Figure (cartoon, rainbow, N blue to C red):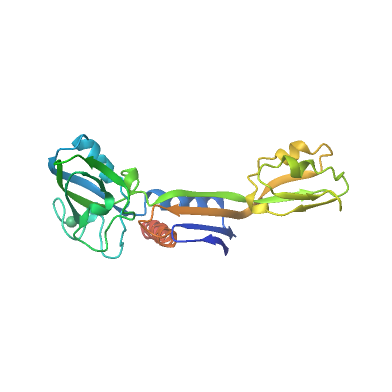
Length: 262
Ligand SMILES: [Zn+2]
């Protein structure tokens, strides 16, 4: 298996992977999306809410605030021995504000410095002069299979690595493929009369170039066993952490099958 990282920052990772098959890469994609746990607010006790927002709408909004997650120090709420919630599976966040002001995610006071909102600037509600809000929110570790608020990924997808073949015997150097391609994959130099593939990884395999080429000189297909994988997270976990955790989950699933057979 060969992996080549193409783009990388705090929340986004794009890489080419070779020497695997559809089933494997799709398993990693699915597990990354719905089985890698993150923290999200699960219960909210509203003590006071003078704002013009229903309690349930506010609770729903709080549930969608991405929280920084430390997978090593937390256990899944469903795996915890406690009855409702405890410090092993949950973190309490408090909110107490008085208007006039806009209350943001950054105003949530977490009882655990490692579990805080990823962004401080998500608007939660607006308070007018004298209006107050006071609530206790409990964030738990959960998985996307249960509710999408626990999905760590905002994008997690792969495509076949594009393979473009140009038959030089048939090519009439008309340059139509370059002008019709919506993703600037080709570059046609009119003076030198040369055609070059300049950005093959941007090809979405729409085959506009194939249809545009009257001489039928172009074929576009996916390379067997090679993929471009892109993963973007909401900031609760890094893309690397999501992928490594997904691999651990897949590995433990395989171990269980082996154990069962033996
Ligand atoms: Zn617990």
